[in-house]
Amino acid sequence: MKISSARFAFSSGKVSQIPADGMREFAFIGRSNVGKSSLINMLTGARLAKVSGTPGKTRLINHFAINDGWYLVDLPGYGYARASKSVRAGFGGIIEDYIEGSAKLWFLFVLVDVRHEVQKIDLDFMIMLAEKGVPFGIVFTKADKLGVNALRANVDRYCAELSRYWEELPPVFVTSSEKQLGKEEILNFIEENV
Image (cartoon, rainbow, N blue to C red; front, side, top):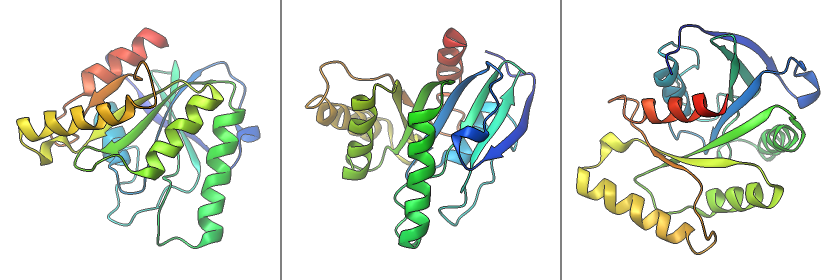
């Protein structure tokens, strides 16, 4: 897929504020500081999402219109330890409201840092998605931070752990915003489902 236009469309704090325009939504979510904004900017070739060294900057549901045919949705990160309990609860409420209530959500990309083993918060989140019947895939980020062998070993180890919970794993993508790795695979996947 070639992206010819990518623009900010709107922000919302709850799913009821999202217009019913029929455009499918492909959403991106992950723990704070997993590289979500960098990945969104890499995929679109535009500086749509604000990249920050401070985790927890995305606090609303941000919709970006892509090729005026579908939405790329930037969801708040989850699990930011430094945020107050009320702020974390607010993020959780927004995320849960969107995941359970968006009739246009077509697919959710769950981002995880490839350098780490399976984190309980990510696993719990994926299990919740499966229980609710939300179609999702796993996006390994920051692949450029590891050598080829270590990268393959980490992905294999992560997938082996997930195989304890799923007979068939969800789609898996390996990415690096720095090296543009995984861009074509994700955009082609979206193109097949728009």
